[in-house]
Length: 210
Image (tube, rainbow, N blue to C red):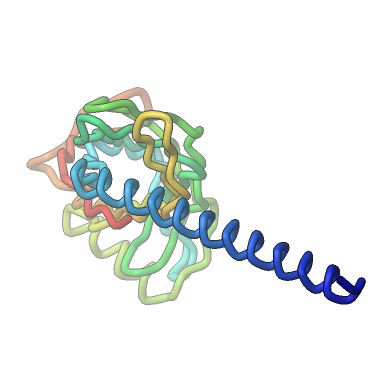
């Protein structure tokens, strides 16, 4: 047998072996993916549930038609409704919106793992010092305070990962919106005086998008 035939024979063997390895890898990857999808379908992961419990207002001042200063402490609870799936929270940021305009800088919440059926409670401060806004928003906020209440949207943006046994999923974006009517200046709901601030009970469910 000539050297050319021997080389050609070895090349064909290597190609067949490479094809078998690739086919085996693809089959294994497919089976793993299929198993994960079946487990995922059986477990049926549910989104975490968020509740805005209260808002403590230290400062909400309109110093000019287009300048707002805000200091508010929120109490927010998060519950994992899943009995077999844990949740990792990462890069959570909380801020306040008024009339579709952000009026505070984002405040971070430390990363945390939430076990099955567990509840976490956070009490972040959110601040906005002399934040420029659209002039009509400054005027509208002043009017709302005079009328006895302000509609806010407190938002949480971040990422979550799901944990099933030893398996941890990739990151998913988390968007939470907590609409809240805070009865500032309402003589029928004066809230609870806490030092130089007033705490208002909200108890409002938030919408969650993952």
